[in-house]
Image (tube, rainbow over all chains, first blue to last red; front, side, top):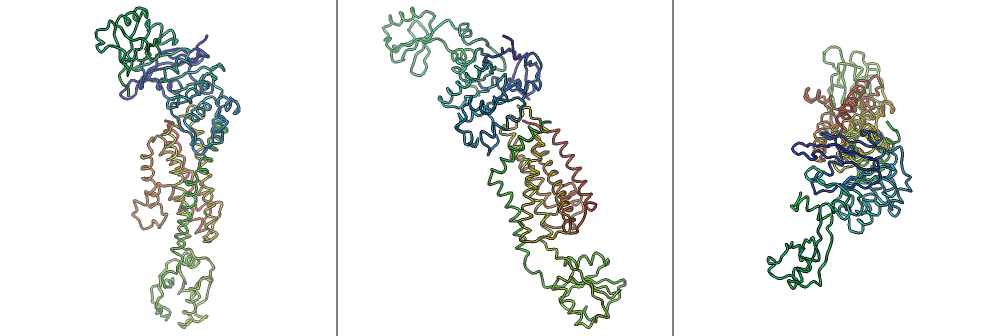
Length: 294
Length: 336
């Protein structure tokens, strides 16, 4: 598979902050590439430099092997983290306006169908719900029938139904062969949608690969979960380390059989025992830390 | 440059403007209310005083008994031609030329009729003084202030309608979204100028026609010339709005800057009163305001019947200002 996008040693300085510190990655055509990271990690700055919204201090971006040009603007679809639209115009009129800005476009009917906009086409954009608004913004990003589409935290603030609905839309876009660059805070979203992910922190990429490979590389253990009330009062005496998360105790185990045997030897009730594999959430917290970001 | 892209933005901006009922209503109602208010305030009879211009080469006091009449203000004039124009516009009720033994009154003026009777009653016969008449209409304050009110509305609409809106677009990310498309800044700015220009001119024409129906304004010049000076004025003021909005990100700052420009411009350019009496330095400062040239041009057309040659300086000044504002505004424009 050939790389549609190459980012080489990207650096971005603001007045007192170095937001991006030498980021490099490649994105193959037709995949969904996820850029993850805590708040302030430099994801949006990186994406907006690639989109041509911000200028880099240093570094190179190649689209189909060439420096960014008008061609990229014609072939890229962009959905920003937050976008306002012109007021007092309807969904259909907004789509029509954006359609007129490009030389090559999808038909309005097609984009309306993909993003399921039919039921609120004649509604003023100010009167859309959060989910409807995001669907419209996705439709605007698709209006030029892009080869590569950037989605910057598209499901932030949506309710679970709207979020799952949006995931279906992204899957539908992927099946059309378009390359998707997705930034998100939701690990579940990244795991289910992304073929490759890169985790950024403090302006650098600190892990990159397919979700499965990253998990396999970083973790060889599983997590055993038991309600705290089922454990003895003195957990210090137990032969394994326990992490308390709300009302559950988590035990990391490299050998489930041995751990269960140890639990049984302690006379612990195992009726509520749950075993789960490590997730991207674990990986994310493991490599970016648990301290609160602003 | 793509006309299709320019048209798309222009169309969207027009829809946004026309569907914002409160803003649209205010744009129409504001000048109508101002003109109606002034018309009402100045509709009553002025002070009961007759004004007679007196022209004579030497300063020898005339022996006419007419000059002994009370309640007549006799004003010495040094130039006959402008004084006749003042009779034409009811600024003088009568003009006496002592040297040629001639007097002028306005046929449409009741005061002129009364003064002629008073003159004859004071013993001045037809053989002593020949009568000449003019027929011009009175120039009321509302006629004088009308171009000011129209231009002031244009100024607010251009500066706030463009400057404030672009800053709002920048702040809430509309400009950022448009930047991510092939739309160029030139196309965007051109669409804003065209959109606001034609809206301003439409409102101007509707307000003028609508209020003229009731007030019957004085118009001695050409409507084409009047349209031209207002159109150029509108584009110049819009360009000034673009200049203010070129980089500003905060609506509060934009509001402050726009007020800083509009209020001095309104008072110094002569919207409400003639600036002849103000400090010479301020008169010079006023020349840097587009509104000053719009107003003097419009009044020259409407009140003095001036043609293109009479308003050439105003047109050239507005053109230069427009070009300067546009160049600086376009070069310093930032989407974000």
